[in-house]
Length: 80
Image (cartoon, rainbow, N blue to C red):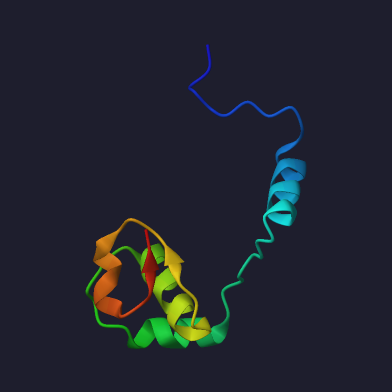
């Protein structure tokens, strides 16, 4: 018995590549300028990954799709 993972009929790399292409989603790499913004963010939120998402959103002027209102103090545009 599995642990409830989504069953794939293709390798995970194929699945993700197809899904990203079909939905016109681009992977945003972490860049030095994102880290620079991150280093200047106040410590409203302690999760380092979510703080990096906020830093990238601010650097790139893009919205974040998240239900997590803890990101709001960073002044990002949050959808959801």
